[in-house]
Length: 154
Image (cartoon, rainbow, N blue to C red; front, top):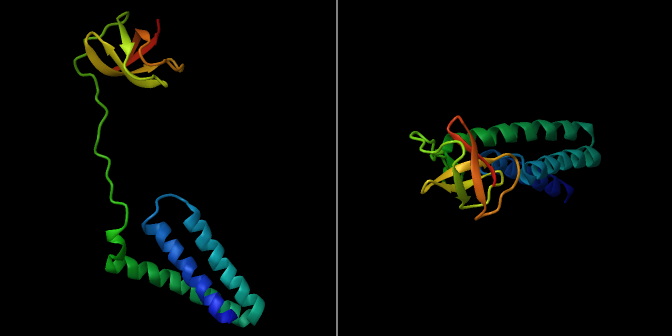
């Protein structure tokens, strides 16, 4: 019965690590859980069956991990469920700025510290000086740096 538990712990740990590598981006509970399950299975093997079986379990776990990664990469198993999103949007840069320092406008959205303002009948993105400015507040353009409009509360 203990051998079955060890095998299940190791297989579940390998599955969680595969999910982490190919499906879930970043370090999540899947990776941590997979490592804990693998270490738990190896520890249980050493504890119940001794050093020889423990060494065999460690070697088998390493081989199983490498083999499973190779098989998954070769067969494209995870292509159906892996994350394939690409970011193709761009921030609108002001090419023809018709905004001057001293112009006044109104916040279309909250500036925290970035948001949308309406100046000279044109809606554009603006940045405050680190303070939050509520929607529908009157603002004044104080600077334009690298085509980014910087405003302050009027």
